[in-house]
Length: 532
Image 1 (cartoon, rainbow, N blue to C red):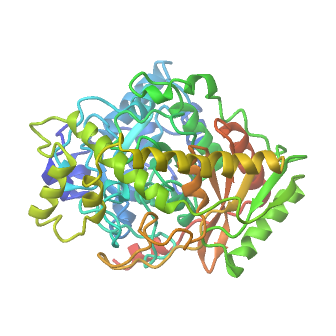
Image 2 (cartoon, rainbow, N blue to C red):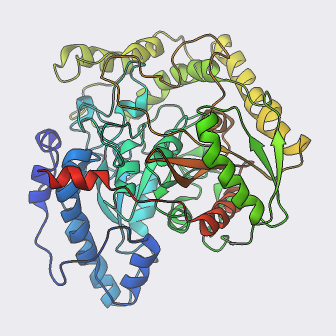
Image 3 (cartoon, rainbow, N blue to C red):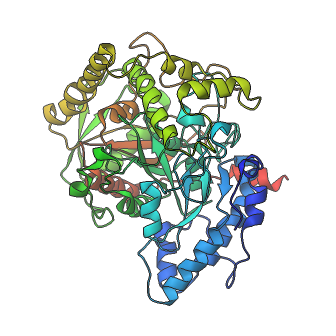
């Protein structure tokens, strides 16, 4: 297998697809809307093979992703991985439920054999020598690395000006309406999960980067408690807030993936308590879990309006029908913390991204600091057309020992934890909170124009509080589940809880999902492909 170079990355799908070896055996499997759980069952029951499933996903990417731009690269050894899985199964050495199941990973997660670009040509030759812990766990479980999914460049921490997608991956499109945003930064994983371009995907989230794309693209996504999943080997924004997490078409599939990803890793000291809290999240799912539970309802949050209230109220009726007791949480318990978040992310990024760059090969990655990245962006014609105000603001920060950073961090943690979520849980005696995740997807704005970036500078309190941003800064888990379409575009409901409450939140989300069946698959992307 030929290892991909920067030229391969630039050419996107053409060379990686050509590099895939010829599969053996059955050639097709009906992957559209096929749950990961069903694929796993069919593999175990001998109804299909990993080669057939992987081949079908590759063909589907070739057919549909040209317009969507959700996949940066297909793993050149994807079919070899699949054949190895089939051999293991034949020999009775299957590694678990994910063995032979094709997964796409966001292109800021290190996987041996593929470049990790974070959407930037500064990392075009960044070939990791070691798997990230996320990839190591998936590899140990037998999952197929199908390829890398597009991302907002540097996970959205380059500029507050409009920049849909990345220079490497192009401008991704929402599969429900190609004129609409797929959100970021996990745009590629969200699109690919929605359009059945993989059995499931893995995204990353710093301040809503799993939650918003999941909602915009009509899939389930969970941002777990910070460091339930190791961050080692992932291009960082802020190790205060960063996490990865699964994105899939159902709660069950999301739970299957999280069960493999969760756990402690010596390479990420913050994850030391993860083993004590991880669980078999599939076993935790219970369609009757909402009965008798007090659930807090948050209104007045980002995108909440007369129009979005309609599907949200309908979702609340489903929760009540399943036995939940709903408690309205007064507005004001949660506050806009975007400006505190801005300060934290700028300080963190300068130090954390430099630490990541120090671990890359100096022969392949010439940018060793944030200052180097800024200079590269100015000099490289592929990068120089985009602003980098966040890079420049981050470079100007004096370091995390600065008292301003320390004071800001203390204030932000208090606002989101003790005076925010914790207050709501305790004062109103609720086990979880629910809110509108996001409204329908916004139109794609032209690059280098105002785009409503979550940490753009504005007067404090000028925007409604974002529950995904507050959960991220608190470090608490956040699950979004589809609750139908509004004007033809998906909207989601979020379930939020205390640290390590993933089993409870997934079970609540599962109960809602099984009672409502509100996910509607996208169709618009098929029409775009048919016109070619």
